[in-house]
Length: 272
Image 1 (tube, rainbow, N blue to C red):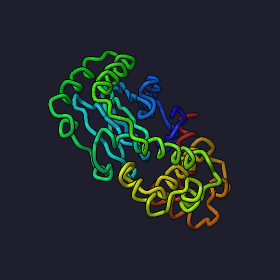
Image 2: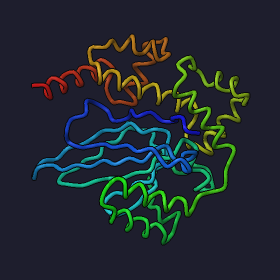
Image 3: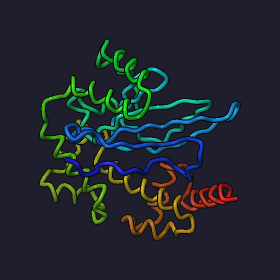
Image 4: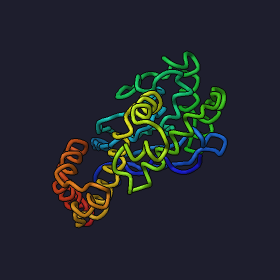
């Protein structure tokens, strides 16, 4: 599968100039399991600190940060990463469900957890970490990560492709508003679908549907703070405004109106 199963949304608020985010697609032979590679880099003046708040995708990531490689399971809550000085964080974002063949057991075991890659790969994790630390730029980081992944590439798992098709529709098809519609479309009983997602993705299909809608809602309010959040909610399939407000506030930490206002004020500050 080459179609996107994760959007480029997820960084909350109006992005300033504190850091640079780069994304690179995987090589064609890895695209069935890898969504993309990413690199966050920064170079801040002495004494200055900055932070980025993220709302995670339903994806497992391999993350190289400060010389160590970790496996980050699907995070169900937003989190904030603080940084200062000069640095970089590189990651490999797997497609939803696509880390299961590497893990060999239920991906739900990793949900809301970050573990050292050494707990899964043993000494090979330290070799990967050293090679990534020595990589001078993004192209070298990608080539290094892909070389190590190819050495551990798993046997094909038909369930990964099936989940990819389902998640693709959850991401792109705005007519889907309930999990029952997914079950009917793909001919999978709801309970079977639930178990499949827990084993492969680590979260429920309902959670994935909600997260992708909230990603887009937050992005649209950040990009156009004058946009009516009620209009955004309706266009994303929320027919009950109170339901949208509750979901948005729980995930983002602010009501839609307050979030749009904070984005408006930050945009004005950048433009001043």
